[in-house]
Image (cartoon, rainbow, N blue to C red):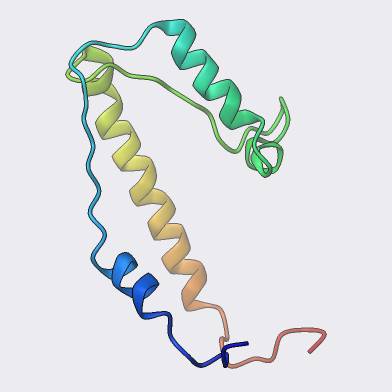
Length: 105
């Protein structure tokens, strides 16, 4: 058995030097394919916790076609929402005492 502090040089090299290759097609996927992909994602291990219930959805899925009117409309709305969430998080982080020992430890 290898000591825990020994590095796996080959694995480290693969992770450090990895390259992602994506090939995108211009045509929009059929609606049935998109629904199947979203449905598969909703059945993953943590999907139920992420989505919530019908009264308090945490995550919703939207499929927007590139360069469409709906995409142009959504971009500033999403950006504004992300910035608002970042501002709230920054405010909360200012009031957390990170030096405090967690309860139960």
